[in-house]
Image 1 (cartoon, helix red, strand yellow):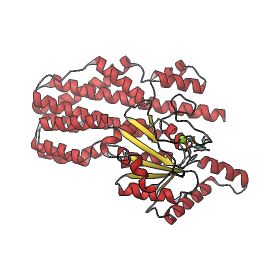
Image 2 (cartoon, rainbow, N blue to C red):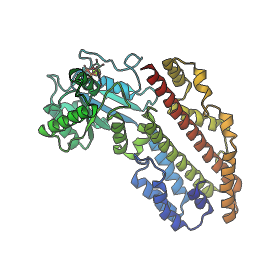
Image 3 (cartoon, rainbow, N blue to C red):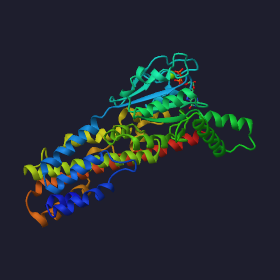
Length: 419
Ligand SMILES: Nc1nc2c(ncn2[C@@H]2O[C@H](COP(=O)(O)OP(=O)(O)OP(=O)(O)O)[C@@H](O)[C@H]2O)c(=O)[nH]1
Ligand SMILES: [Mg+2]
């Protein structure tokens, strides 16, 4: 049961509710931050203080629209052959052999800036920018030429030492008020080579630490202030610093863009699944608070009531967010060499009717209504519908996220069985 929304609906002690808002909200958000800016949260708190329902509805509505429609443009820069196109493919969840992937090769393939849209989220574009190592690269004019203002952040990739050109570029990006992230690619290959050349003394962690120290020393030598470095392999988005790079990007994006980026995270680790679950949960809660304010503001039987086709759409949307849509399941089945029916049979989130009929949903909604009615009487059916929608969306989300975790385990087991 959601105590805050219940208290809000009962209209008791508004100043107390307003002062509880921020501490309560901080328990709802992911460890990578909220989808609302501090400014928006303060506006909601102020509207709660004044008891202005229209304002609460307006602020939440506007910020959710902003979060849902936020575009994201990521610039990827580096010398030829460092793995820019491969990095873009990894972020888009595509292998180089798939249709629409950025072309990858041992010869110089990226000569002009090329946009790659995310296959699922069309408001996300990765930009493969021309190499920094070519004779035509002039750090003084580069950023203007590539229209730097259009990008949310810059990834600068190197597969060996970073060069002076890249340091100058990083400095210039900072001066323009944008963030850059230094990525050292191909560490899988360094490890492989090291193990081949020193099989007896080889220690993975030591080699990685050595690469990290070397990069940091090299970056401070060429004048990058307080350098941070992420060691990655484009062949494995779950290993090395790839997950921490994703989490850092998520944290450092403006709040309203986090929702868009969180949806991109593939369910390749339990941590990524949890992060995505938290972001969507935050959104469900905000929708519920908005509906509650709307119900109080207009005293009308709740907006659209409990609309089953809408709820079914919502379940499909969550399935797609977590890679449990038909297309993704077929691909996974093919990769694992098992039938899609086999995969589906162990999942609980695919059966819409079973989920909606779950007794706990109505029971939880009823509990909220009872607590609300004991304080205020009034519009119980509206409140019941509101909580029912809230609990069913949480039910969908949790069922889908739990299935995504099960599928991840299954995939990992299958892969380790093959090794
Ligand atoms: N081992 C290993 N190889 C990689 C990695 N990333 C890319 N490669 C390989 O490096 C080569 C160049 O990769 P690309 O992604 O085409 O590099 P690029 O920076 O886009 O190159 P240009 O388009 O020429 O500027 C390809 O053979 C890739 O398969 C990585 O993380 N590990
Ligand atoms: Mg390329």
